[in-house]
Structure formats: structure tokens, C-alpha cells
Amino acid sequence: MNRSLIVVLGALAVGAAVFAGFYFAAQRVSLIYCANPADDLSWLRGEFHLSDAEMARVRRLHESYLPQCARMCALIAAKKAEVRAALANGTNVTDEVRRDLAELGELRAQCQAQMLGHFIAVSRAMPPAEGRRYLAEMEKITLGFHEEIEQSMSAGHEHGSR
Picture 1 (cartoon, rainbow, N blue to C red):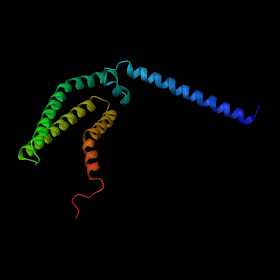
Picture 2: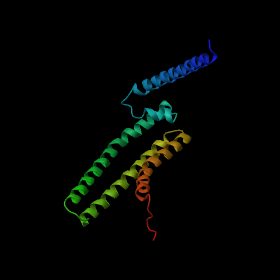
Picture 3: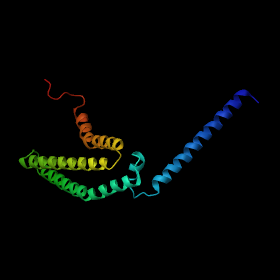
């Protein structure tokens, strides 16, 4: 048999074995994470190496925070509807629109403060190093969203420089 044919067949066999290995590993991971699709906190256990007791504390904190979170979301949604309604009635930014925007901003700031307080409490329920890592990620998400918008809005032009 030709030497190059043996090399090609060997490479194909190795490639098929690697593909099969990754395929079956992905299947196993999917089964583990899909076993309880209603558990939206299961990723925390693996990502932050939580024991059963730590996971139980985190779950209690999360469940006690959900009503507070839902209330804030409802308040923010209602205020956004007011802003949209005020904007729909005219072509100018009225005092009413300014007031509604200020109130919306205050609600969002309250929401962020409550979220950060919750994340701090959750981080304290974790091992110290994992808690610091968790808190850093949650701060990035909580504060970073607005930074991305601000950066995208200012891209390509300088604010305040003349």
C-alpha cells in the first residue's frame, strides 16, 4: 500500500476518534445540565465549586430576592411606559418627559444597588476566593452594561473637546 494513503487513513481515523470523543463528551455535559432545566442556579455549583450547604444558602438568598427583583422590574417597566407615552404626545422634550426620565434613572439606580447588595450577600455564602470571583463577575455585568452603551454611543466622536 502507498505510504501517503496510510498517512491519510491514519489521519482520518484520528480525526474521527477526536470527533467522537468530543461528541460524546458534549452529549454527557448536555444531559447533566438539561437534567433539571428549571434549576437556573445549577451553573453556580460547577462554576464556583459550591458544596451542598453553600448551594442551599445561595438558593435561599436567590429565592428571597426574586420578589424584590420582580417589583423593581415592574416599577421600571411602568415608568418606561410613562416615558414612551409622554414622548408620543409631542415633538419636544417636555418637563414631564424630563421628570419621568429622572424618575426612571432613579429606579434603575435603586435596582442596581439592590442587585449589588444581593450579589454581595450571595458572594458571602461562597468560599472566600470563589465569592470574590463571583462578585467581580456580577459587578461587571451590573455596571458594565451601561459602560458598553456609553462607549458605543461615543465611538467615533469626542465629547466635550473643542
